[in-house]
Length: 217
Image 1 (tube, rainbow, N blue to C red):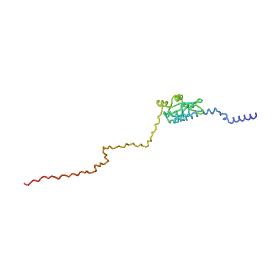
Image 2: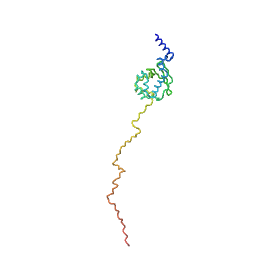
Image 3: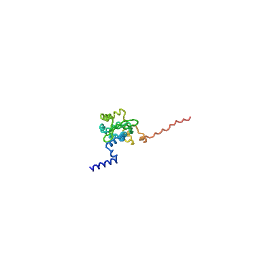
């Protein structure tokens, strides 16, 4: 009994000397993980991945239930068919509202404001897409969804396909050799008949015929 009293007294002394030790608890650690700072950090990482075109990394930050709506590679392929209309523009987080394990993040980009839902899951805050968007992924394939977005005018410009040949190397023109017409003489080839003298004798002019002299009277 005396030993027990001594141990109890020692613990009391430690508590008095270090009151912070008694205030630390698992609930306090959980509260710090659910703070506005951690939500802002998680939201900024996820939104930066999306705005920068790292769609696979963004999908990795979704909640586990949301990831069942569309496969990672299909989500990446969706943006190859229908790029986002405002690429490479970062989101700015405005406000954060936390309700238990759920958080609502309001962010702005290019003058537009949007709300994003996050949920504390597995020790971190993870993005939860809107229910209607998840339903589209489940009900429609990526190809059909891309066609619908293209028709609605919500897609950005698709990168043009690079040329298959190297534009720096000129392609020599294919020339077709011309066959000379045998009926038409080639002016560049001399006519052999023109250089050979004629075998006929040269023409000798006739002697002039003089008129008979007038007889004397």
